[in-house]
Image (cartoon, rainbow, N blue to C red; front, top):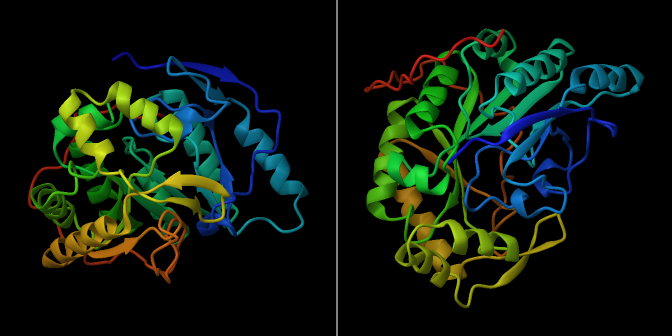
Length: 329
């Protein structure tokens, strides 16, 4: 599968945007691009009306300048900024990662916190910046399987599991508040005891102590992508059949209807994950926004600053080192 072409375009609207999600209600957000290179089969953003298609990604090339102007005019700057609710700011483009670096550096130098979730590879040039402002940075690395073959089927152009494990190990070693995000868990595919055990063992070896988790949810666009892109009828049927009789709920804060797995299935799956994670010393926080019918008191932890990374992070027991990657600066 060929990587989408990166095109540059100016951003004309405001850079800092509010989010309707409950977990981001007090947080400003930034999207550096329109579209994403990773082509995940379950991606909700690919069904948006403003999605530019699978063959191109639009990079806003004036974000740092516009952001500096916005911050200068604000009477009260945001306490923290979340990257990126509809894209991935660590996509596989040198120009995108340079823009991400410049934008995050601008915020951090002004004492504004930075939070992000990524399934991309974070280039080493970011590590000194994050370490310098460690108290202001919170990272989540999305990883729902340690199996490289399965990951390639589900997320064909995202970073490999090995690269994402290396992200985790490096960030933790540099004192950054970092956790893994197992989202989405795919029913009967990535939530089996064997798959979860393999993943939790790999995460623990990289020094992870916290996991955020959520199951796959469906909208008409997501269902269409899964039917078209999941390879083979066995895998497609295994995932989609699990949603039979699954309720439709309102995504917390977003006023969007989503179909979720039946409540008993999700309860069993999350308990299975908690049990396996506990054997590896991992804590699990279930996403409240995508499970409004579960009694979850804690927030989804997308932008916390109350869980600093442990200073005595466990050293990896295996080599997480990805292939050499050139610096971006």
